[in-house]
Length: 424
Image (cartoon, rainbow, N blue to C red; front, side, top):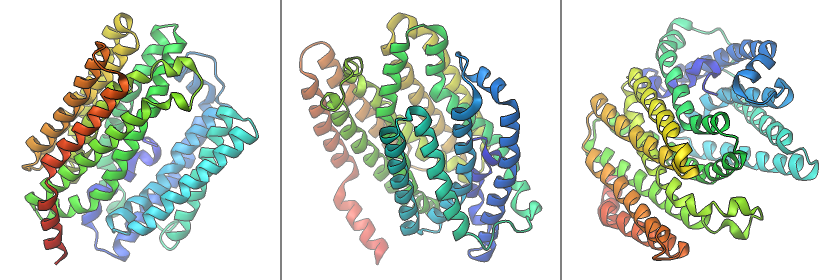
């Protein structure tokens, strides 16, 4: 999905205010979708021709390109078509339509996954095919809703070339960011023969991915309001939205830690049950991922795409070096420490460059919140690790302290007054 349409979908956020609301803006969205479709058809043909060679480049084992890798790549390419329309809905504040399409996509995906995996016993093949069909349905719906503006003559000079100039730098940057997130799995696979460790880490990453989904959900909800405050240079509003965002992320991760450490009641695999005590340590790092995510908006709005390249390049280097140094010595704990420190590095760099792009006064308060939450989780986890308290006591205590941190920092009464004044 990063390579899809040369990453031009991300330019919608950066160039959104350059177009007049209405027909002009819709033509821009239609041009981006149409360009993505044309480019992705050509890209899919090339992937199919290169197929097995591409598969050998990615995987240690001899895995054929068809059908699973073909399904996965097709899914990624198709996703850019509807993501462009989704971004348009977000920034037009058509949140009802955005929510409906998101829920429809999720419902279709769950139903298809159940049919292919449980009913037809298709396993990975079925999971990937279900994803491909679900995203194709949403893509066709978005095409229908935007039918007046797609497959029309593209104004490349106005709607494509300036955006490509921006996205051609952010594309590789986001791809490097993706590599920095998944480099540890490649290192485990290629530097060790311990497939159980790879399975355990993938299981942990899947649990913690719920935090990532929560971060993206909060970000999607708050982006239009941050954008308006950024354009209007409302520093106080930006500070309030950032605090609200981080508070939501902290609450999401705290609840995830509590639930994730008690999954032994739902799973039977003892190898996976034995690793659940690592959930707090791994999940805590996602608060820094959240901070990086919200501050990245400033870089996008300012169109400072080079900052992305520097930040993600540094994160990839840090992740690779830490994993090489720590995996052999500490095993899966080393991988989790590497992941935590990489996210911390990413947050620090993103905040630094965000402030260079557009100075706000939310830097210190937001970062203090993130650090306070991380210290809270690590403190109670260490008490568990040194056998002073049980795991259940540790995760319950961190949730209580997290709620107190949120209440002391966000100050609900002040927020209530602010939003009442805005409503008036």
